[in-house]
Image 1 (cartoon, rainbow, N blue to C red):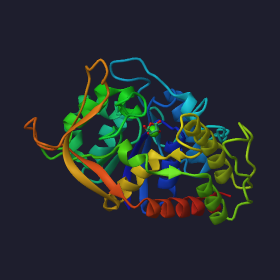
Image 2 (cartoon, rainbow, N blue to C red):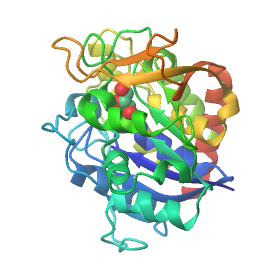
Image 3 (spheres, protein in one colour):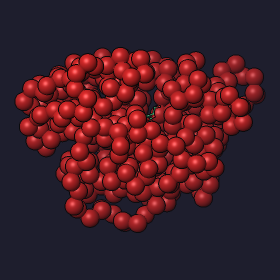
Length: 343
Ligand code: BDR
Ligand code: CA
């Protein structure tokens, strides 16, 4: 099994990433770490616990992490992910006590879990890098103990999605992203595979994908919303997983539609999860990646030196190309299997 540490700011596409990992038979989630980002960390943490319980996996430890970036105020984006991060979906009830060590901080979890299993874990960060940066401040050797690191963040040769040049996860905590990029890629620490917007915005979840998912899950047909009707109307499905994903994704579709992207949604985070499971699904190119911290117009921009101008060794692999249809085939079939199991 592939052992994985997921650090996320759940979040609609984070939800897809978490369920996809839970659905994957060869993944062992060592812990789920919550960070502030899309919504405040208390909401992220509640979402993670509730989703694990819904899937019958309350044996997996959830560790609450930073409640804000290293050096600046937290900004959240309820307009994108809904009032508490799950779009129009209700948060599933959660009653089980937390697994593992209930009060373990997320940065401590990064340190301790990689100490217990050096060289075995794949790290997957699909929110701001705050927890990992804090962990590396406390334990600079941490990067050398990871087998692999996959980051959803940044944008290369492509406009940003939060400022003209910056991507959300990096912009929320630019100092943390800078510290993480600086700590990896040399001296025995792996080069993170960076899944930026230029690739993840090609991963568009459509209403037709939802229909296919419901069919594969053998669920009652869902009433598909369109851009024109239905703001907030709840879909009806006899399957809890399908109902949750439909209500969450419909909100995400509406957000993308409202900013001119069409009635569909970019699902960055489950794609990064697929890369964490099998890096063979992407072509990558080496680069020196760093984050602009000062620019009055460009703060939070990920800058890639691919021409050797800085005279620094490559510290990252930029994910370049993938087979989008193959990704969706795998995502939908695994989510459907999970949905059938949960009912
Ligand atoms: C990233 O920002 C968040 O809103 C998403 O969950 C994703 O991780 C995309 O820029
Ligand atoms: Ca995210």
